[in-house]
Image (cartoon, rainbow, N blue to C red; front, side, top):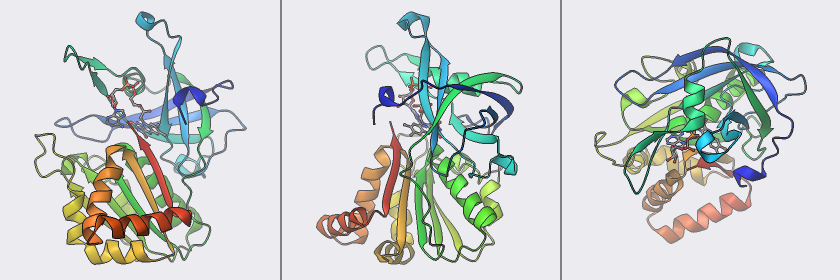
Length: 286
Ligand SMILES: Cc1cc2nc3c(=O)[nH]c(=O)nc-3n(C[C@H](O)[C@H](O)[C@H](O)COP(=O)(O)OP(=O)(O)OC[C@H]3O[C@@H](n4cnc5c(N)ncnc54)[C@H](O)[C@@H]3O)c2cc1C
């Protein structure tokens, strides 16, 4: 669905409760932002997004600059406060392809500059296609990159803190440029480490082989190193696959899974079956 097709005709206000940087100063800035939502009819589930209505650019005559952000909290609300949600926002820049100049992205810079007490306009929530299965014996295979971790943080909180009875395997393959960029699993914030002692949970990290160059994250190697784990899960008809983050991720995964399946055709056949069964969900953005 195109951004312009999202219904933002019923906006509401949210107040910033907290904004903290969750990457260190040597790497890209990503912030965890807690918002108190002033809208009694605002209810959401894991994997949904909200629209942030940032002030537009005068230069382009836009009153509002609208961008979507995944909710990083479970449906119980951030810290079990039903009116609070959190977002995980990377400060983005746009490189002009002609001049090569770097411009700050309007919405992400607006969000990253907010201070506690500031208010913003939002709309949503949107997108019901990225949900945990009802059956708690089913497996979750979550594959994410960068800020794509946000809906998985929400899933993990829901499964292990709200539902508690989860018996299916939960596997997180998470990629970032460097170890410092592994969100919610680095020195700045350890939220996901809360689940490391769950018998059903395992996390696998993939980082770029050459973080200073524009090398893609090394999912191929991570899958090959853990081929039994990833492959036995993906073949299991009770496994639901969730993919989240920037859109180049799906191509990288197709390559990695084709290698694990021994051929692109074998992987395409299996993937088509998973999609047909409704067990393949993606939340990808450019
Ligand atoms: C369903 C959905 C969920 C999203 N969830 C999140 C989220 O949880 N956290 C988040 O930070 N963004 C998320 N995004 C991206 C977000 O909507 C904006 O596109 C992003 O913040 C850039 O907007 P901007 O106005 O700052 O800059 P723009 O001028 O629109 O873009 C600046 C540049 O940043 C690149 N870019 C955009 N998003 C990212 C990213 N996350 N990481 C690296 N580069 C990026 C763009 O390709 C562009 O080149 C999501 C997008 C969608 C469609």
